[in-house]
Image (cartoon, rainbow, N blue to C red; front, side, top):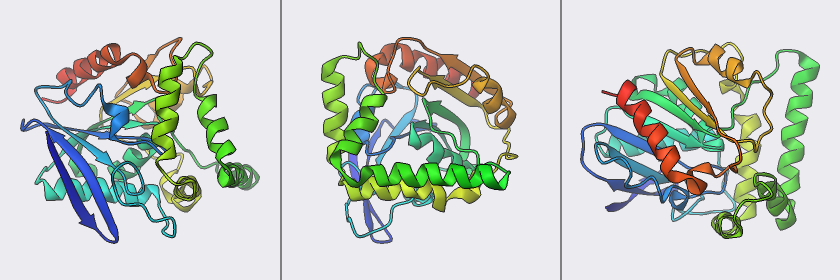
Length: 267
């Protein structure tokens, strides 16, 4: 294992590297997450160089409550790590909001991505109807305002668990999240609106896409078709009876799904 830090703009980015293989897999955590949410994936892909990043404001990366944090910034940080490590391309795995960050990355740096994985990922599409767009933006503004108090953080995270989710897992997720100041968490949520230029409904990519979803988001039955419109080369898995942090709850099953996909699509 290599633990490294990289200075980018006013941020210090912490990241870890496992292995030295020519093919690379990047693990991108979700909202107020960290490398720790990938603890069961870090050493699971022996034939790949695994790079896990603590995005600015999260984990062991620098934190400044007075700064703005955006998903576009996070996508640029992935690029900076790739450039620093002289990695020309990689497969990106994004959990929750981490998937939206990966979606920005493939729009800005499409030549540097061999494929993308949505690990119960947040996927945004900006409505074209003006009233629907305003309602969409208002929802996100209200969501950001709900993070004025710690009770908002806890309520949101608890929505992502099931009734039988192990209490140990719940405690760990909350502990990781609370290492991120709430002001930073709120700033990240607000960036959904700031980065809206990346959420066009008509976007499409030929990149291979692996999608793995839990019941946490209560997605509509046709959600797979919605993603297929953007990712025609998609492999979709819906897993019942598991919470939003499925890579921590059922890691061996998740790791095998990812490895099988990599074997077929990243040669």
